Each structure stands twice: as C-alpha cells, then as structure tokens.
Image (tube, rainbow over all chains, first blue to last red; front, side, top):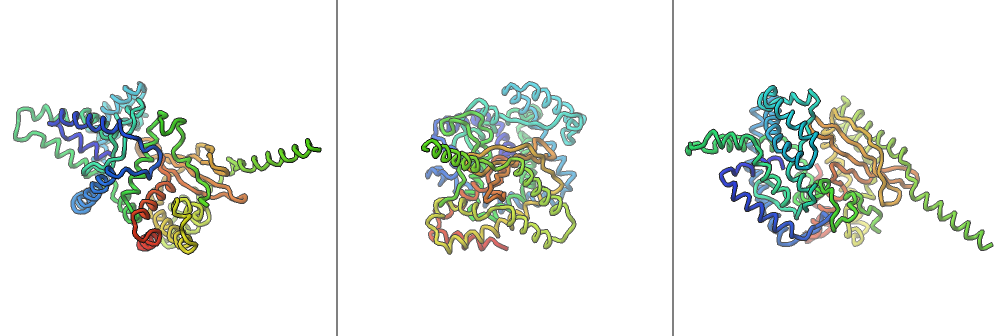
Length: 269
Length: 198
C-alpha cells in the first residue's frame, strides 16, 4: 500500500489523466455489488484478471524488485535505511494534515502540522523523527480513510500492475494523496521549463521509496509465499479483512456493523 | 405439581443457558497473559538454542491452541466430505506447518510487549475475545485479539486476529480456494502442504 502510494503518485505530468482514470474506476466499482465479509467470495472475470496480474507481479518481483531490494539492503546500514524510511514517511504528513481536517479531527490536524514543521527542519528533511520525542506522536491518515468515514464503499479487490493488492477506494485515495506529496511540487517548480531533466528527481525518489518499502517486507513476504499453497488467496483474504476495520459505516452487507472476525465458529459437523 | 415441574425444568434450562455463557472473562484474560508471557519472555527473549526454542514453542502451541477445532473450520465445507484418514492427515500436516510458520514469525514480537484491553463477547457459545495491543516503534499500536474457547472447563485459543485479520479465516480462504481448483481435491492439498514442511 505504501509503495503503491509512492508509485502512483509519480504520474505527475498526467495529473488529469489520472484523475479521469480514478474517477472511472470509482464509478465502476462503487456501482459494483459488494462482496461483503465473505473473504472467499469470487467473481470470475475479475478473479481471472486479478490472478493473472498477481502472477505477473510475482514474476517481476522475483526477477527484478526483490533482487534490487536485497541489493539495497546489502549496500546500506540499518541506520541509513531508517533515515530513508523516515524521509518518505514525513512526505506523507501533508496528506495527513488535509485528511485529518476533512475528517473533522482538528487536534490531529494540529499534531500532523507540528510534526511536519519540526521534522522537516530540525529533523533534517524528515530523516529524524524529532517530533515524537516532543509528544507529537505519529498518527497518519489518508484520503482512503476519509472516504471510508464518508461511507464510500470500498469496492471489489483488485490487483494493480506492479503495485499489488488494492481496491477502487484505496486506489482513488492513493492518487489523490499523491498530489499532497511535497516532492511532487518541489520537482514541478524546480524543473519547470527544463525539458531535459523533467521529473528526474521525482522519479528517482519514487524508485528509492519503492525499493525501501520492498526491503522492509522481505522476510514477511518470503515467509508468506513459502508457507502458503495459494499465496494469491491468502493475500486477498488478509487484505480484505484488514480493510474492513476502516469501514465504520453500516451497509447493506453488514447492517448492524458487526465485527468481521466474530464469524460463526462452531464445530462443522 | 405441574407448576413445580415447570419450575424445575425452567431452572434447569436457565442453568444450562448460563453454563453456555459462563466463559469467565477474568480467567480468559489471565490465560492469555500467561501465554504471551511464556511465548515472549520465556521463549523469544531467552538465551537458549534454536532447537530448544522450537521444542518449547511446539509444546506451548499444542497445549494452548485447539488445532483440531481450527482445522475443521479451515477446511470449511470440505471437512464434511473428507474421509477419517484425510481428516487425520490434514490436521497433522496443518499442525506441523503452523508450528513451522509461527516459530519463524514469532520473532517479530522480539522486544515487544502486550497491553491488555479487556474482553469482548462473541456470538459463538463458550467463546470470547481477549483484546490486546502491541506498541510499535512507529504509528498506532498493532491490535491483537485472541479468540478463546472453553471446552470442559479448560481454555484454548481458537483464533488470533491481528489488525482485523483472522488467521483461521485467512487459512480457510486459502485452503478452500485451493481444493476448489485442485484436481486431486483434499489429497492434493495434503500433499502440497506436506511439501511445505522443512
């Protein structure tokens, strides 16, 4: 999700196109029958596409992305990786400021604003989380969560090219939050009228962010693929269940807004 | 006479009803406290050999997790059509694979501690959730809920829900989807799970 966020937000020159695409996805998906809490509910056409895309991503990961992530781990120390991680984490603070406001949590807006100001300056461009020590705890949110609180349904599970598991609402949120990324605008103005180096800074950063996130997930994803007989189903089920915690509004599939994990759990016989 | 009989019947009914619902919240929480304490303090944070750790983990796992019960659930509707041999074989390999997976993954909790947040009722009889959270280095704490079931007076864990993801539900999705596609059905699943064992 995090690296999905970083990558999709890179399509800076195609701002309009992105907005149109996400609007289309949103329209298709929000009018789509919800799969509800049944994490093993299938829709054939979408499922066929998802599995094909999942396999494609797995191959790309195996031959390119994971080896690069391992290379990154080999040439950096944990200290450096933590600085890189914090740097990208800080870039998401402006999106949090906007979304806390949209959700009506003004105290959190203040908290995120304080964090961004302190960490961008005293925290050396966000590489050190000085603000946490001052009592301004990390408490991020995003447009996806805003939409959830506005009772916008999630839509079906979809696998995005290279970015992996998502839903129409998650994708919409990710694209929207991309416009709140400070490096997007920094690069926009810095390379204005300089065709030959346009986007180079932003794309470079995007790639680094992507690698950084993949590096953090090496052990987890290895363990998951080694022990699962159907990694696609495992990831899909876990992803959908995890997202249900965002859905604070009751809907037709879950009128009383019950906890998704309290399913009937009795002897099958 | 009739009144007395009705009364006896009703009070019997009332006590069985109550017995159904009397999984004791306090007892369940203490049980999970012991499990996390043994799992973390006496296992991950201890300085014993990897082999000894694995042995202790296996013991803890078999003792406190009701894998026979979970195994039935994760096979879903296929449990009913499975032969007794298939059932035994599946539970056996499922148990081994879980011990393998979790003895590796449990290290993620190294240096971490659980905070207890009370309990939550379940709609299933004799079960409840013990709510805990694990503070993380960054961001909000991770939520971990333990689904506890009381069978004949003893407590066992039947599900662990991490950040709203139920392990039992996830395994069920994986296995039922596999069986649906596998030409060898349950036997195919059992064989493939066996190949995953190291």
